[in-house]
Length: 280
Image 1 (cartoon, one colour):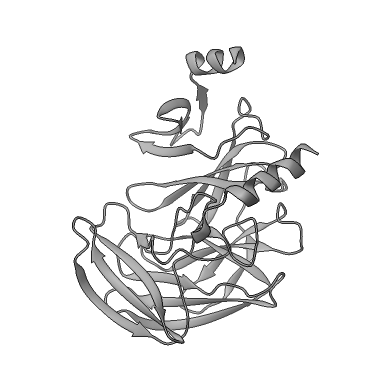
Image 2: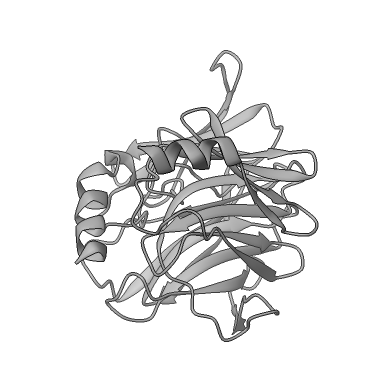
């Protein structure tokens, strides 16, 4: 019952830009928000242009359009969390992954476009059988990462590596080698990326536990860091992840409520905040 109530709350709280066909997960796309690279000064945004898509590179400081082009088909920037965080632009600024919103559930296939972010031209179109969502991209754009939903249970999924050059999925799942048989579950609530673009950190909740999924986009591996003090039924809709030197901070309304070591993945809960939460 608690899980059902949580999913209902997520359905009514998801921003419009992160919805698609009524699905309570970021299957579709957030063209107006756009995609940025860590430390980059550009934002790649998309908008419809009849049956096609206008892609623009705008300067983050003042919104000046630096270049633009219409590409064939309807595409947009992938959202990765329920609060509308996006992904798709590689850290080197050269590769952009766009997707197409599914028209029904479950869709028979998922369509992606690998775009040259400098020229704003499509390098390759990819069709994957079934339902996938874009999760991250490696710093050099070689590997894109997609979440595969094999059935109708949206809390049951696998992370897959996709070769952006060939359009082929790596047959192996991307797992935590310390716990290769552990099944991921939950809804993505917050996202942060390391400065070099190698690590994508995502806060999940709503399954059996709350955890941070640390995806190594270069090594094609991952670590799942349990946050045992944060209940999976807690409201984490306003929680943010912030990458600091040597650690990832979990913030709630500006307050740090937990930290995770970047190298060790050791967790620490801020005692003052935890004590306050226990009193409320």
